[in-house]
Length: 135
Ligand SMILES: [Fe+2]
Ligand SMILES: [Fe+2]
Image 1: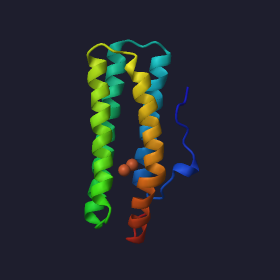
Image 2 (image 1 turned 45 degrees about the vertical axis):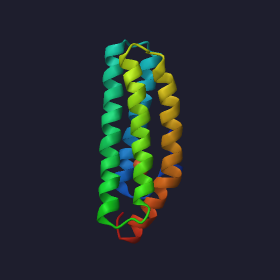
Image 3 (image 1 turned 90 degrees about the vertical axis):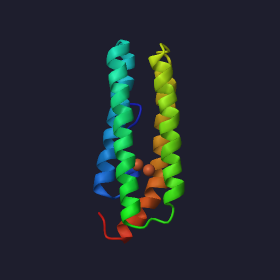
Image 4 (image 1 turned 135 degrees about the horizontal axis):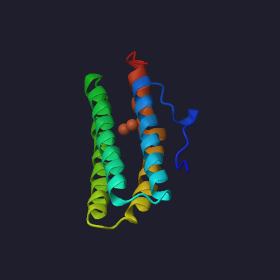
């Protein structure tokens, strides 16, 4: 079951960012598959952790590029990242406290947030980076 299907409309045109977005799609789909397969709390928790960890790695890369290339909308973009991390961390805590059904809600939230964020916010960033010569 693929919740998120990668397609050209998600490409922002900066290779490393696109590569990481694809990995985020894969991780979200892996977690969704594990739920469907009825995996227990331990394997689910470890994929969930990996998704949170990689999301933070990815945001750190974008934020580093914003800083390096003087991106004017850095503050708003970073605030969006921070809010996502805050919400996903709340889901993670609820899951750790025994609410396993929360993963479905988290995935719905995460996948719709991610696709919208890529299409609007990351594409604006990528336009700026491409003007600065990145590809
Ligand atoms: Fe972003
Ligand atoms: Fe991104």
